[in-house]
Figure 1 (cartoon, rainbow, N blue to C red):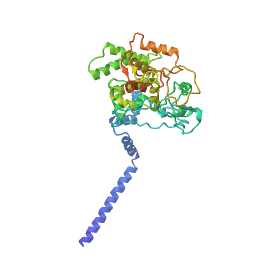
Figure 2 (cartoon, rainbow, N blue to C red):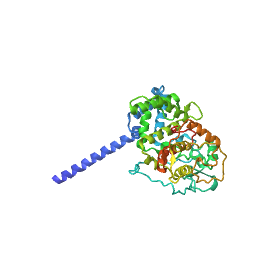
Figure 3 (cartoon, rainbow, N blue to C red):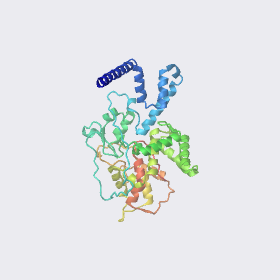
Length: 405
């Protein structure tokens, strides 16, 4: 009898639980809006900012005066996200008709052996050849492919347009320079910010936030110098000297070659990225960032200068070479005979180097400069020039890291 009673009690208990579950499910069906709100809040990660935004969306009469502020805040937040991810304009901001989706970019990571010495032979030349198929559509169409002067990638101009990386204003530059000794950098190599690791990028973003730099905005000379003063005082706990301020002003002029009175955001970002690399990474680590085309370009610049049997050049010649990396925007006639595997900008011994460009370089260096007699060998030449070789990657006419005079 006791066993029968326990079974009946068990059945009754199961029935009660089933009724409770059914009632709970019915209640959820009757409140779909609550479920959607919970899912929306969960998707917004439950931060205080998103909760406030949710409340404002439910009360449009209270959100009227702050609508513009919310839009500015949303745009500013999106700009910071693009900066963090190393991206330019968001793909959705383009007209998406007939456009490709840009690939996701993964920031590089530092390896354990990055700081160890790297031997790059001067005598052992590298056979540099560009890819045969377009990086985007993977189709080969011979002469219509445009090579990057830094890496081995090649592109169709139509594919670059559909990716949103080529506009009408820059299309002529690509078609006129890609097959010349000047060359053209693809959208990977053109952005020096993509050389930073995630840790380095967050360090740069923190500096921007502390100095109240708004992403994707132009900087006037006063803004630029004020930023440089804040950064210097933060790192060294003392104000900049007059000499340092003068050098910062010269750097601003180098970033504003067209004398517009302001520095464009991409140029400022590339400048700050290369400055951060110079500060945080040793020269051996920077050497590992050079591509085969850039190494060949360095050999082509050093070999004509080292005429003696010991393979040495003077310090003055080494400094002079630091300025030649940025001669990438000389106006020259397009040449169809130049191989797409050419290493890029012309060296001092190149026949395409004009007398006017040499005179401009002499003016830049200063006629009163005395060349040092310190001998410089190939490894030293490479280490002292690597940061300027990297800084010369962007297509912009701006000099993103002005060499010492």
